Image (cartoon, rainbow, N blue to C red; front, side):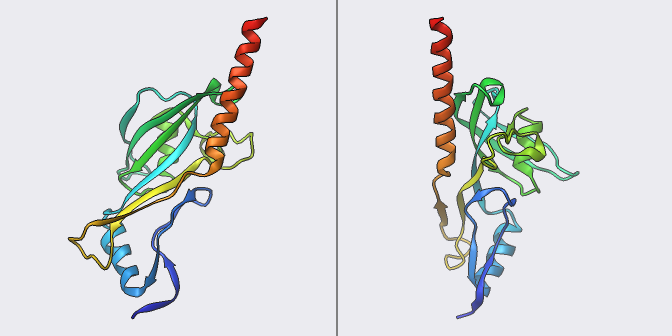
Length: 186
């Protein structure tokens, strides 16, 4: 009942960002999700990013307006790594939870508030020398389900971060350790 001719996107991701997207199959679901969930900021999103550099601290809250509008992000370090060629010898993997939905919010908050750009984010100062694209991925989405209504338990959908994240961190750490051993032995 009320099926759309083709499914419709409920929200957006920046073009180079990978990960979860929510799609509605009925008009009723689309209207509910777009106006009752996303417009009222009732959806919870979590992203994973690898930053070029060392982020001070283990977790925090960013409250930094973007284009004159309020923008807030919660962040938490999930892993730290070393690199011989990226990030001034440091890489930091973060879990990011935007509390608002501004254009390029996470990318700008990482660069300006944390002082480290997301790898591959050439637009906001991130190193893309490896040519592997942006290291930012939407990995979790929690929202009220249209059939459960306003008071129903939220539905949470997750996905793994892209394999390139682990591959890059492991590759860079191994290169660091090889370089470190070579330096010590000489």
